[in-house]
Length: 246
Image 1 (spheres, rainbow, N blue to C red):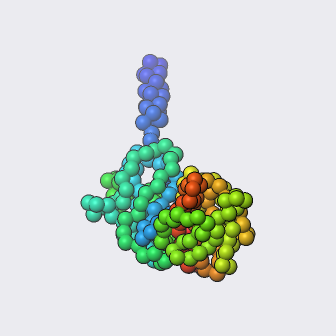
Image 2 (cartoon, rainbow, N blue to C red):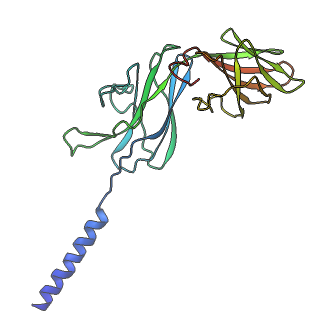
């Protein structure tokens, strides 16, 4: 009798341990740190994510002129006409940037967001999608390149001048400037959080500057060359009343 009780006890411990070993914890945390990046007639989205769930298959991207999205019906479908918008199987915490497919008009306010998406045949809906965590605004805008001796223009707007002898960027014609220092990426600054602008700023290679006319005009200037005639990349829109980004 004692042998039988001992055997059952061992079997119970084995089963308990086995159940613990095969337990799988599925974790679906919504993407975070969402940032919309405007382009000329284009929008990209940047965010962080780290999905541990074994049935995670990718991300659904949302974009529209309304901030109300129905999940998953309003998500952008992939090339096969299905979800998720972007297939991905990365389970480690990572930063992602994806262009959002579609036609977008410069000067129009859009809203974008992203969710994590997975498939699961064991549930009624056959899919799992995280709730929308944050919806961010964005305005596509004109952009281009310029080369000049001293005058800085963006979309035919003269916003400032370059004084190479004194290493200064000077604002002009009612515009003011804010310097963000040397940057390696034109989109290093997208949204303005400090609305204080100045008459001039230090001039430097790879310097990133945002100009404001104090109304609805915003211009972004990135100095790409300081040898000879300075050259720069610019972006411009006149909808700062809708979005303080550029």
